[in-house]
Length: 264
Ligand code: HEM
Image 1: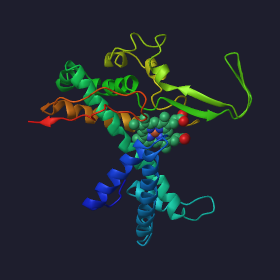
Image 2 (image 1 turned 180 degrees about the vertical axis):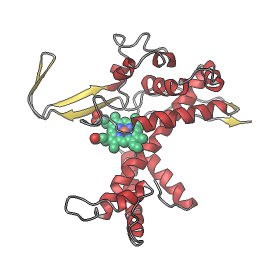
Image 3 (image 1 turned 30 degrees about the horizontal axis):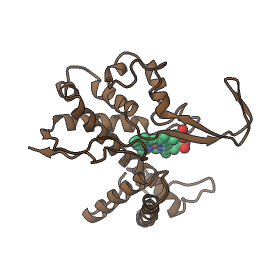
Image 4 (image 1 turned 120 degrees about the vertical axis):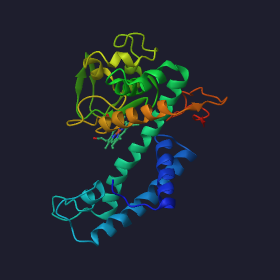
């Protein structure tokens, strides 16, 4: 992103982003912690944006920070610093969320150790990416997304009036036996055969990101997760006794103990 951070500020940003992801769509103390973290980081990043503007505007912007700091709205003026900070955080925060999937990747390698061998062997081209897709399909992260119907419509015989709350069941579709062979089997090979299975995978929303609200960060997520999973598979680690059950009543969820590893 090009955000300059010293050690303690980097740790604080990481800590705050974790709190923001953990407090997503949750009432209670986790939500309050997330709101405080968000306000703190919006203020800090707004100061960073103002710092960038103290220097002359470069013709070629070299980072997301510079691009946002110098972005001009339709009125020709740069964004107000707080808005630019919100936009920066909209990229930094979900990138941190990939760590949740990385934890699930470690969980999968522990539960099915041959996955670790397959990731290590590099014999199958594109396996790490297929593994990343299967982690996103198999494990629960965002269970559903919601929206209000923008107009009266009919969806497969169902009348839906404008303003009705509509939920898209992400976890349900990603485990629908009509779409997936043995949906509760962890099998990255289902993504090495053809492209059409990818249309069914809606871990980060459905439709087309160019025309709707589907996550525009999906490619970034898959690429980062494939790299992280390959790195994890290459580490020599042992897994001490812990509670690796995953509570489905918590959102966003994780193994109860996180995933503790001891490196040799
Ligand atoms: C753990 C990884 C991620 C998950 C589970 C995730 C999930 C989602 C979901 C469910 C939505 C809403 C889709 C909808 O309403 O239909 C969304 C939207 C969005 N995501 Fe992600 N995302 C992830 C990573 C990222 C990354 C890495 C970026 C950018 C670097 C990103 C940027 C965004 C943005 C900007 C939106 C709003 C799109 C809009 O409203 O038009 N996400 N994401």
